[in-house]
Amino acid sequence: MKYMLLIYGAEDGWTEHERTECMLESMSICDELDSQGKWLDSSPLHSVMTATCVRIRNGLRQVTDGPFAETTEQLGGYYIIDVEDRDEAIAIASRLPPAKKGTVEIRPLLPLPDSLSLPEGESINRTEADAEQSIDYILLMYAEEGAWPPEEHATALAESVGVCHQLHANQQFVSAAPLQPPESATCVRIRNGSREVVDGPFPETKEQLGGYFLIRGANLDEAIAIAARIPGTRRGTAEIRPLFPLPERAQIENDATFSKQT
Image (cartoon, rainbow, N blue to C red; front, side):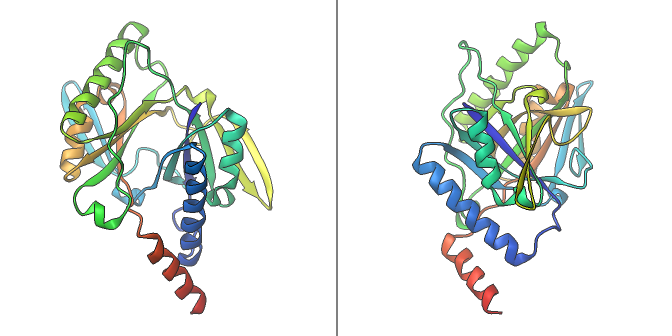
């Protein structure tokens, strides 16, 4: 079963040394999961100061700076994994370094109907050198539960899949998926060496995260234009966040060694 692990935490809660060590440990866990066929994707995100929100109301586009949810702990990254069940997802979330200072929210992905299929995605940028060619963005789709009446939801879903195919034709599509309802969420924290597991989503907001699109664009304006084409922006909000390109592992290890020496 596929799950999205959403990493929430205070942006100023890490020293530079801790952040480097967190990055190295997280990359090692990803390597391990990848060797087991359980890792699909992951990335840190740029600061919430880079967030942009897009809504379509009465046919007009509304664009505002800043994140969708004004919370102390903000979304800082994500993992997408394919594991046996929720218990295994919880075990993996418990190993992630950010669980010691923040919260890992686990959300199962919602399988598409048999009549719909997404295109095969592009490989996501991994290094700063790759990111010079284009920018990878995540579009986080927020909406109130029940925002789409059942008779309209299927049409909107099909339209979203159609947008994904158009993006794929333009080499702008990485991946996308709806998420199961917020009540399916599980939050994991590690405090003083003990694991805390709580049912329900992390942010207690009226509009909850309902899915995501990972796209590739030349700049923010292009990402905004893509977000405006997604049906979800007509009833909810798309928060655009640029992915943070990871330095080469050797550079991270050198930074960690230098930090220890100083």
